[in-house]
Length: 432
Ligand SMILES: Nc1nc2c(ncn2[C@@H]2O[C@H](COP(=O)(O)OP(=O)(O)OP(=O)(O)O)[C@@H](O)[C@H]2O)c(=O)[nH]1
Ligand SMILES: [Mg+2]
Image (cartoon, rainbow, N blue to C red):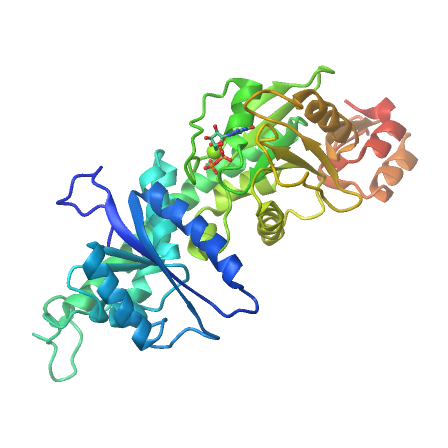
């Protein structure tokens, strides 16, 4: 995979790039295409490339061979030459052969990457912790393994002739096969290492869950202000900047609500349209930190004209993580900035309007959160004396999710379960 920064180039030397997208005029209008490319331009900028020109083409479906049409590719080639562009970024996932065909049609030395590779590249340069780096490497390898194609120079078999593969593995395989085998081995090693880390994380998560402290996760589109909000509330000191995917690793901080109730707040990786599924898979354990919370705050950049689309993307990713049905509070952020209209959510949804930069609306946010925390289901431990069989049945009937049941020697029963506010009220005498 070509990297945004070639090894021999200075790391901070910015590349000159072009953006290419197509729109069919129906599902994607010219206007939408424009905004999609604005976002792609932000991604490119974050990755260290300056956009010199954009090229779009109206066509019903991508060309199988070259994604854009033949004439358009010639136009692209000329423009790259004239503008000294050495990187072309396509706003869609390209097949390995499309990448190769496009590169063949462009001046020598021009790299072609797609949106997924660009996002993977940003993740790679922003990963700081060991786990983050492993996750990114795994996603990159899984992405590029099927795309590994030979370049011809080293494709002749040297050893394995006569159909006797045993013992001829090393010298007998092509460079391509060797590379593939190394990649598979590395993928397996990374998976093993990450599943070890995931076990530790799951244990910690279970401990937090048992503690009964309400866990609140801050999720949302990248650059919405998630880290800025957590910093404002808790002095977490997380890097928050005007870059996409500034945060990759989850951070959890204790926070005491004005009523005195303690909650755990988690800030995590942001979402984006067409988030490469390899990243979602590799970052599963990070994303689970958000998805397994008791309450979800969806932070939305209210000043972004695309805010409704950002909410939809966020909600879809939450559903794919199995987090639907949890109490959600929509937090419209950046309300200090001018917006074309006051953003709204559908009926029955709760929303507050804040500025994490100026602190405006934070009191409303906290009181809305307080209300949800009071009614949210949470892990509670009950101790029932031997005579309280009816109450235990009532707990089970209330829809409680039992985490653990212990039968004590004196005949009493200790039940740890996730229960709602109503059940807690009815059985408050037995809460430990
Ligand atoms: N004007 C304004 N800017 C804000 C506000 N909140 C955050 N920002 C800015 O928005 C940019 C992104 O903020 P972050 O907190 O890094 O956003 P994030 O959601 O954590 O983003 P990722 O970690 O990249 O997904 C930063 O430049 C912040 O200073 C706000 O209320 N008003
Ligand atoms: Mg962040």
